[in-house]
Length: 83
Image (cartoon, rainbow, N blue to C red; front, side, top):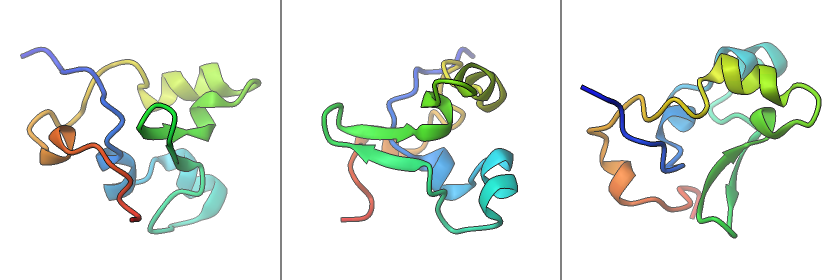
């Protein structure tokens, strides 16, 4: 089974923040580097967008490798979960 592309629904990061988030911020309910991007209508990660460490972070976080939970219902309802 091939993975589906990431749609930026935020499920993976909101349900289980990454190890890098835990290292930087401790065990928090929500990673401070996850944010809702109004322009694209999806969640984005500042760790992966960092101009210096972004390439390393994208590799470590698996950015671009597809959805880790293709049956999750959030894929069909991408929205800001804080509203």
